[in-house]
Image (cartoon, rainbow over all chains, first blue to last red; front, side):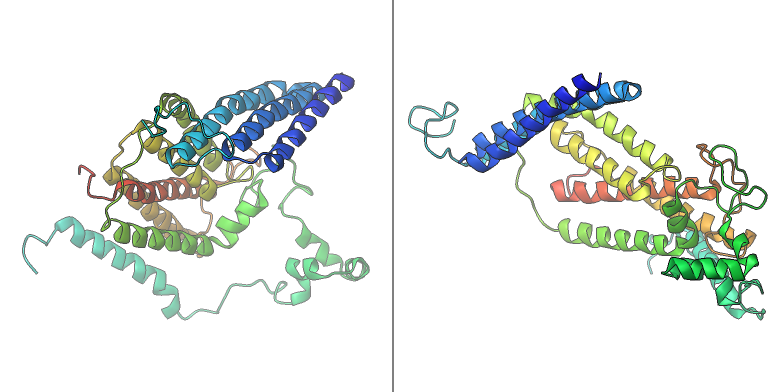
Length: 107
Length: 275
């Protein structure tokens, strides 16, 4: 039981570390959002599952917390990306934007 | 003064506030024997705070060995020797959370001052912002609408839980009010739920009024402002600390309604409100 818990917590810590590394490495707002939210969702989720294996009496509460993280984190990243696109923040290297029309103007 | 300005309700409210104010001032004009401090406690060395302000362990041990009477001030209960969670009855104010008993019992007047400071700041905010005009907000997307509709009831539930358990667990009225105000902000931005400012003002003013009323009744029953006059139950139960539970719930409602009014005026000013 403890061995499984340690494996889950290790995966969570690894993904959280990679997400924070991605914030430093990526050049652009959208890429940073992608690395941070995806990695943090998986990192927090597997850490919570690991703690649930360590202490099985908390498992129901921890499942609830993981469920709320799974719901709220993608919506938060979606609204951040949407707001930054609407205010006109551009990509760093590739200027092609699928949401704009052929002349490069906003729809 | 025109006749249309005169209102019977306003007149009685003013009279009631005047009577309350005079009643609060009444201890100043009484001739008494000063503050009621126990003769044993008038010696500073017998007080609990003196014990806690000593820094070295050796000095504490020396005092404990010298003065055997001192040990009784370290216990909170009257009958039992130690406080047992879920069994001890009739404690000083019945809270399991020490911070809450300090914030709302020993220093209740300070909390009332904080409430008034928050009220005045929100008042200034609404007065200034209601004269300005604001830019239009973006329409929320489908994901935001569904997410907000799912999350907002749970946020209000968590806020109510936190102010109801203010005497048992960390938290209390102010963070609970902040959580409720965040939920109203979500519902305003996410799914355009247009709540009325007048209802919030009703909740806020009545909660503030009842906080001061209950505290003043403590002046009548126990002789001190914010005194506990209802029975304090068993430690650790939900209905344990008598007045602290009620006042913290009122504080949570007041802060939540106040911050929601501020958010609403930040959103579109008070002009668009249909009153």
